[in-house]
Amino acid sequence: MPAPVLEVSGIGVSLSGRRILHDVGFAMAPGEFVGLIGSNGAGKTTLLRVILGLQNATSGTVLFDGKRPGHGAGIIGYLPQKVALDPDLPLRSRDVVALGLDGQKLGIPLPSARRRRLVDEVLAAVDALEFADTRVGLLSGGQQQRVLIAHALISRPHLLLLDEPLANLDIRSAQEIVDLLARVGR
Image 1 (cartoon, rainbow, N blue to C red):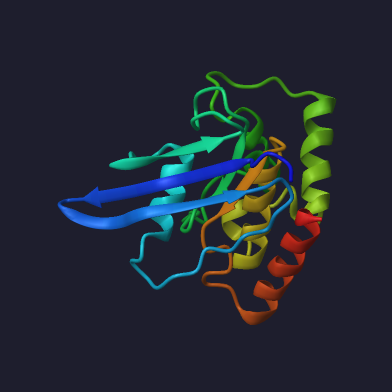
Image 2: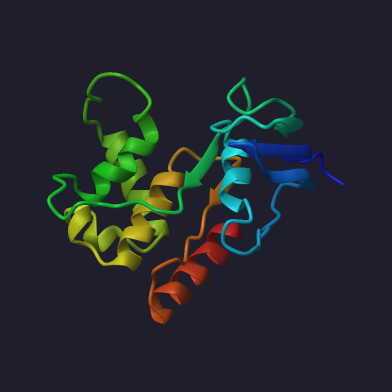
């Protein structure tokens, strides 16, 4: 069996004196597709935040590519549970996706043919190239999800975490996203 890409062991989290997670553990191998299922308030988002290094655990460890997240480990792509995009937001779909390349860097990136090609490739991979130049706030919920998934994928992550990627989508859009994620997984 290949070395796990993600190892979670003994994770516990308490918030405001309330225990949210207790002794959570699992391992994921490269290429695995795993779903985290639980009722509202069960701690699913909290666990993802611990894996991302955005939330401290009160106990346990998380190792990603053999290291703690944010300490030289590989790249994690992330789609949060809720992203509110203002219809007046003056960013096109391609701009949002490009932020996945350099959104953590200061300054304005210089345009280049290579950057545009990378953005177009990932937009095409999620069937979003046709609205690459549309303001992201004007897109439907399913179209926005495609753009946000492209944003999470453009850095070529070793791990992709999606927090309720089908929330607030109609049945057709949800099925399209499921099909898209199956393609991405392959």
